Image 1 (spheres, rainbow, N blue to C red):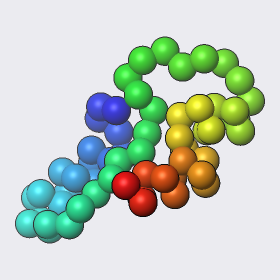
Image 2: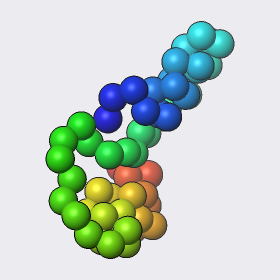
Image 3: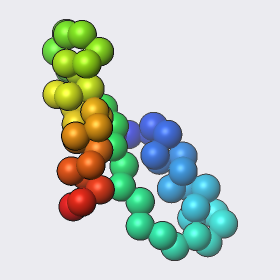
Length: 57
């Protein structure tokens, strides 16, 4: 995950001296297999279950 929305948010936070924990969830910088949107979101951990797991730690 390079140069995505999460990176822009972190840059904004740094520029404005915000100090909060941020968990970036995004597409890795590698080839992603083909599939339906639901399959891809699940595979990448970007569905409801994956996001809940990321938040819980």
